[in-house]
Image (cartoon, rainbow, N blue to C red; front, side, top):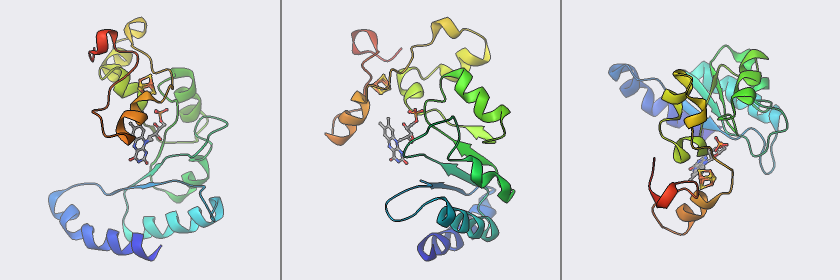
Length: 155
Ligand SMILES: Cc1cc2nc3c(=O)[nH]c(=O)nc-3n(C[C@H](O)[C@H](O)[C@H](O)COP(=O)(O)O)c2cc1C
Ligand code: SF4
């Protein structure tokens, strides 16, 4: 917590000067800590001036469930994990488990995902299958690609 708060304090003057938001990305359940500790951390981060909490789950049973406990802090909370699947994203938002949803693999598979969703062209979306090939690329030092790109070319 001390490291996190010192980082926030260090970047805050420049962020405020530039009119930028401070986003803090946190995994809410990890080795040796859980939601209770994460809530204490998030509360302190919010008090220190963090504008958005970006909650990247290690696992996720219901859409946004790991983000939901942090929604009481008065700071917008971002949920992620297979939220490129619209029913999951809508469930997270409509159930009040998150203020915003993030899309990871879905944006690698199809960088036009937001525009296609916005304009209702859902059948044109190149969907992420969750195969993890892109992450393997990253770990093995290759440029990140997607198994769903036809001919290996980004759509
Ligand atoms: C290629 C790749 C790199 C990632 N790198 C990070 C990272 O550096 N830090 C992080 O918190 N999450 C990272 N993630 C996890 C994503 O933030 C996200 O939690 C995960 O992909 C689940 O969301 P999705 O179902 O929309 O892909 C990465 C994911 C992918 C596919
Ligand atoms: S490589 Fe697999 S996990 Fe990565 S974006 Fe493409 S389909 Fe999704």
